[in-house]
Amino acid sequence: MPTLLERGAFKNVPRELWLSYSWQIQNRIKTAKELSQYIDLTKEELSGINLTKGLYPMAITPYYLSLIDPEDINDPIRLQAIPREVEVSSCQELGEENPFREESEVLGLTHRYPDRVLLNLTSFCAVYCRHCMRKRIFAGGESSKTREEIDSWLRYIREQDSIRDVLISGGEPLSVGIEKLEYLLSGLREIKHVETIRFGSRLLVLCPQRFFDKEILNLLEKYSPIWINTHFNHPREITELTSLAVENLLRAGVPVNNQTVLLKGVNDSPEVMLELFRVLLRIKVRPIYLFHCDPIKGAIHFRTSIEKGLEIMRFLRGKLPGMGIPTYALDLPGGRGKIALSPNYIKEQDGNRFLFESPFGEVVEYEVFEI
Ligand SMILES: *Cc1c(COP(=O)(O)O)cnc(C)c1O
Image (spheres, rainbow, N blue to C red):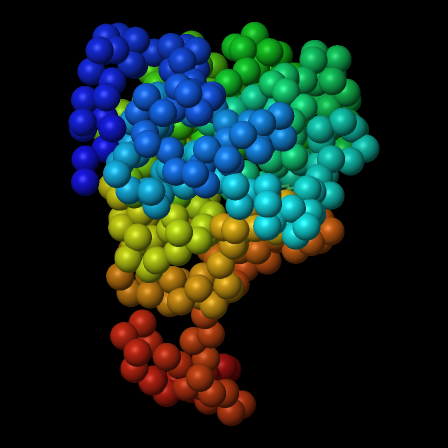
């Protein structure tokens, strides 16, 4: 069925504005009244929008909204963007706000693995995803860290020479003004032991227009090596604009990796995942992680079983190039780290003799010799 864009819902917006990041951000849809001009909201959604006010607010860029098929109440983009009552009702007693105990010694900085550090630069996002693992921060309003706070991060990182990689997240870190971004990046590049810098950014999905802007592309190129980890969950999120934005990033020397979250009703289907990873490879984005949905308060309704994730991983093997198959991973509670999950291809083992299951379902005998 056609999307809002295909139905001409935004045909009055001049092309120049549609392609402008700041227009998209300024015209985010934040109320039930505005949203009702485009979509007949269900009772569940109307009450969801009401009940989440001030707690888990709604904001949707016109671009992301335009990808929704308004006649499908279970549209995968609609489920990620529009609040439903289930967010606040049945799920409130389950889950935790911050199961991974993020943020430690220095405000907004989480140092869990010796070699990597996670920075939360801002609480602003282009779209507030209903399944966000940091939805606890939405209620605090939209603000980014001050230069003084950035200074305290830089001091911390300077003193810990085991840190080789800095992951800048949020909120949406690439929404922050160029000057502040440059302040952080130039500060990080003055620290010898910092090798790679990564942005955890969902703008390629929510507002790819950001990467039609020379200023941000030049900045990312200047402080190379910089990587982007983005977050596509469904093949319908990939458009011509996405593909152009990825080209711009690659030309600026920025590789793009994807981290999908397994979400009930959105992408908990082997066929949908296969299609998603195929389309990502076509636009030169490498799928690196498929995350099991975290036990986040207000997002429990998106969780699936682990068996579902393993079923998907088993289905993918043999149908996609190896570089298109992500690692299925789960974050352990209490900040104890991420682990990889995999279907078991060992059917039987007797010393050095194995019975393996092939990607085509055959049982294959294999003996391991060593000299
Ligand atoms: C996920 C995570 C990272 C990054 O892990 P990668 O596997 O390298 O992507 C770093 N720090 C924290 C606290 C994390 O949760």
